[in-house]
Length: 439
View 1 (cartoon, rainbow, N blue to C red):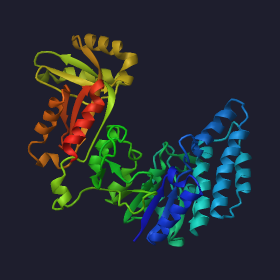
View 2 (cartoon, helix red, strand yellow; view 1 turned 60 degrees about the vertical axis):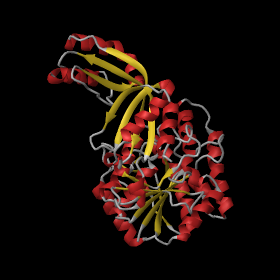
View 3 (cartoon, rainbow, N blue to C red; view 1 turned 90 degrees about the vertical axis):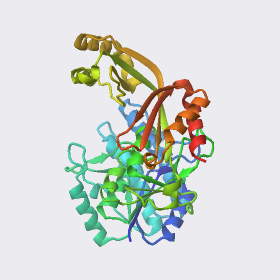
View 4 (tube, rainbow, N blue to C red; view 1 turned 45 degrees about the vertical axis):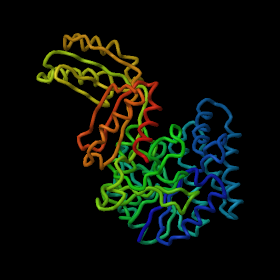
């Protein structure tokens, strides 16, 4: 069995956290591939190492001394080395980095050094082989991962070393230059490693015990989700649930590799398992209606009304083209016999709303209207389609609590009911829905 275990920055912030990771790895010999992020915050007022590296680059750009910041970075790794009793020659490693600190230094290269150094320390600590991600994850020049070459690289390395530590967050271009993922990309690195090695499980270790049913900033001590499908996770993530980097699921989903979100600080907690589907006969599957509730504030509605508009697709096509021309993304399109609405984030519409209205007037001969201050809330659950009374219970709970529903939508696969409420009712609506379905 092969388990790929990726540890986030909060799991690697200091020597004490390193010790927790080592204990987790030693508890299960199948955890033979370990990916690490750069050290995260030790306290709420601390700095992430990656943030400091970006700050160094900014100082270089504007000819401001970066010495004090770079010394902070050096000290973080020196402290971890000392706390873990390691012997890695960090002076030499930092000398190599310092020799490249000029205005010509690649931001991708500099940002990647956080993971690079942490992986070297972790490899020595575990007694595993360090392998540079630049030798494993291959990018094409267009920024896409070359999965065929990447899989070949992983298999070749794993044939030689079957216990390896890999830096997350980056790979290399065909010319050898370092290329990073977007922030949070270590999650993606781990998923690519798991897919490349056809791992049995991809474990993503962080500082929460799995995915929570609802934002803990809105509901105190919400329940966690034991099992969630990839489709449900996509819906939750799209509507604001901060779970994983959005591209994480694709490599492992393609091979139906279970993704297990675990807590480094509570290693006995099983966390959340994510996979394509689960057996419908389990008690959990038959008893639970709702998987999670999430949402976002500040949407706008572009409202278009015209007789028999549903029979004239040309109007919808023109409005969609206008939105595309003005870079206005489309989140939902509720429709009726004589009307439809475009739902879009207000921040994307604010600078061009009068241009959009004028274009609709010119192209369609319609005076469109815009409503603002709308929050969209997603109620996600793969069992909802097979349970009667879910919608009635949902709307009844909101009605009893005097929450006005502005929008109602359901996705095609029926795992998601989307409602729109006024911004001022956003948190209250989520609490009401959680109390109605989570118990």
